[in-house]
Length: 114
Length: 113
Image (cartoon, rainbow over all chains, first blue to last red; front, side):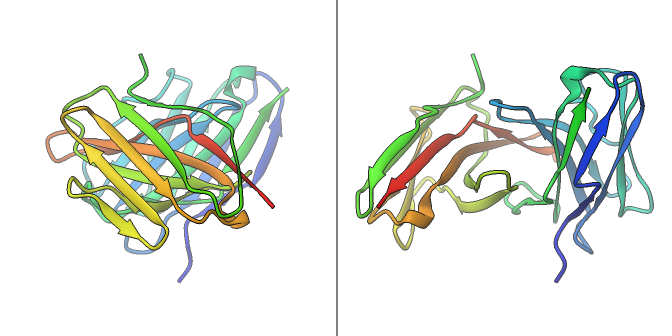
């Protein structure tokens, strides 16, 4: 079956612009996560959605970052007024709920802020 | 101190060698443990879960020592295709809610012909 998909695969933007990154999870997966990976850094948790529960936003680095998940499926991560330090690969993952369930990652969106 | 610490490497080993990666985690409340593999410019993929009793999958053996908060991965008979970054991962479950993965920065393995 289809895996997690993300779009765009690459995004180059100018400092101060807003960007939207999209994630399509595996069909049926109720848990969805956003992570980011900066050059030379480990993956950093950003936000978690599970079903209809309130999302866990504890990893968002600033109020310029927000995310939505519509209809329990597709998710959009929005970064407002982008800064150069936002440049990273943004990875989405989905899974069945539960700590022992494998998280399947999408290919990521490589964001470059000039 | 980072929650999950790994030797970044690189580990350069010849084909056929046995190589071991170690990882320590700081939060004793960590509940699940995994090794993920990440190829260059690709997404991470689950290699194996790590259980307290230790587990083996072909050439790969994972061990967990909860008392020492230490996780290991052993790769026997290394193949060129094993070249990748190996990520040590732990999870915490927040009262049945978030199951976020806490990643180490990864250990780079380069298997040489």
